[in-house]
Length: 329
Image (tube, rainbow, N blue to C red; front, side):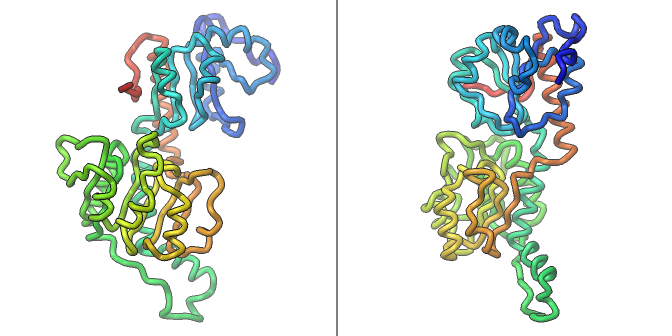
């Protein structure tokens, strides 16, 4: 990028510095729009000679996706006051250090909630009704040869569905599956007021009384590997795990072994412990549906996200309340 690209009018640059924090592989579609309103500081742009002197005074960061905001990151920008996030999760933020430094942090809020809820229901339908298996059966030319041996699924309605994390996404999943005639229960950090679904204080008890577990909670120290061998055993041989949260919510090695041995019935996974790497043994299992962390990816969700983070950036510089701000405990 030529150095002339960094020159902007004084009214757009005066104290309106914006740091873009992202993995090199992340391309931000919003950069050209943001350049019309802010003086952009991009650590990946080596051609900007003013980055180093200005980085000491930048007050707000736009964090793209799950790019980690670590202690080392924060040390580079001593004047930072606000991190505007674009991810629904917040496990990539060092929240303890942000809180200690008085840095406010926002997330994507509800921007992705409807689309992720739709996708969770889609994964469940696919696993239960064996949609992907049937697709492979037809594409592989098996139908004329094997005829009535085509794969059979089971009914979605009447399934006992346990939702782990009844927040913005989980509550939407519950409403959708209630319309299918499923029996919904949940576990969450605390019981939700004005919610009619039965509450379980722990995931083990929820698994015992569920045919399906749908993971919608955030990844924290408390929820890391919350689905372990004991929970999988409690779910049982016909049980199904759907994960649209974070890969590390599940003990992935135990899940793989239980699926291989037929100790649970199936899984629908959009997230994994070591993305983009997926355990290859899952590729050959017909009771598993895999997708590459795409539950949030729709034009509509990106539009809602842009509206939210644009508002939060303007609100920061105008000293107005932020939306989708993390409340420190």
